[in-house]
Amino acid sequence: MADPTSTRAPTGATGVLVLASGEVVWGRGFGAEGQAVGEVCFNTAMTGYQEVMTDPSYAGQIINFTFPHIGNVGANPEDVEALNPHALGAIVRQDVTDPSNFRSTQHFDAWMKANGRIGISGVDTRALTRLIRINGAPNAVIAHSSSGKFDIPALLAQAKAWAGLEGMDLAKDVTALQTYGWDQGLWKLGEGYAGPMGVSTSLDTNGEGDGSSITPFVSSEVETPRRQKPKVVAIDYGIKHNILRNLVDVGCDVTVVPATAAFDEIMAHAPDGLFLSNGPGDPAATGVYAVPVIQQWLATKKPLFGICLGHQMLALAVGATTEKMHQGHRGANHPVKRLSDGGVEITSMNHGFAVDADTLPANAKATHTSLFDGSNCGFELVDQPAFSVQYHPEASPGPQDSHYLFEKFAGMMG
Image: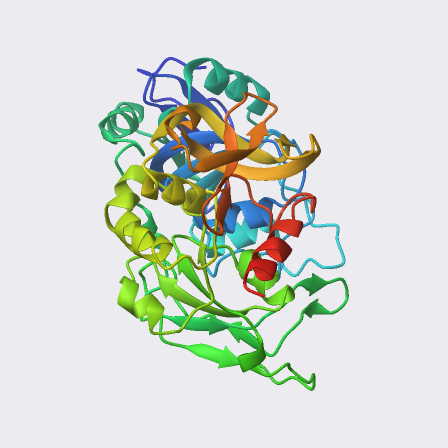
């Protein structure tokens, strides 16, 4: 860590991370030039960096990857979880190499640059991870300049001035701007994504376009008539594409609505079930407008399934509270104990807030718990068909131990 009063970069340094606490981390910049302020968190996944960077749940965050070889398989148009990246930047150990993978269509450096995302390589990411584990996730500015010239005091002031994620509603920033249908199924090697319908690149999910275009794809497959499928409305607090693919895979007719959709808008689609998606920011802030809608849905006694932020939204709707975590859970190797039979699921996680298990009401039965820190990772309501989990069962990236939850939800709708 360098002296924060110094404005001189070490020889060859073209990237810098300036923490609000005063630490300065130098490296070699890649991707876009510029600067961005956010919360630094670490992700322990060994693969899936493109899915991580495009996960809307990472809005407002800078990712410190603990696996050293990030970018070595390049980038492609299939391994994305949203139409635009949402993580602000990437911090990596090794320089990004030329891609070595038959699926690669673009160098990761070029992909980062094209998407306006800043990267820094040559960083001791394990040391930065230890700092986060000790002190918690810090606010910071990540910057890249090919000139190697930085105004460190100004960057430090910017990091200190940023309010942080507590109290911040980011779901409104990443949600779709209008309702749309989704028919695309799961990806298969050599075949891509199955299904006759996908979202075109002109459909905006971060507030920068009109969000008005859905492009149908030609398909020779015979589709089951839509009226025979259970109708699911998915509330988009920052939904990942692979969640929608999994819902389609278990036979659901999926309609996605914006995070701020009113209860009447949801019911106009005559849904058999409601899905609450993942998303970024402070759940208490998003809950201001989301919770009343969920409470109205619960009164219908129809099936409900929530994950990640959706898990926290359901908890708030039944009277529980959420809290900011010291360092959060982010990775593709998190062990979760299933309380019904003692089984252990290896899961994918990305959350910096958690449900306070002690505040769950009597009709909410805990179903899953983290084997890392004992935090609540799932519960179900004993008096109606509603359940949620804190982790990401769609697993993109990550293991597929928890795909059964989508089948459980589909089974609830008959």
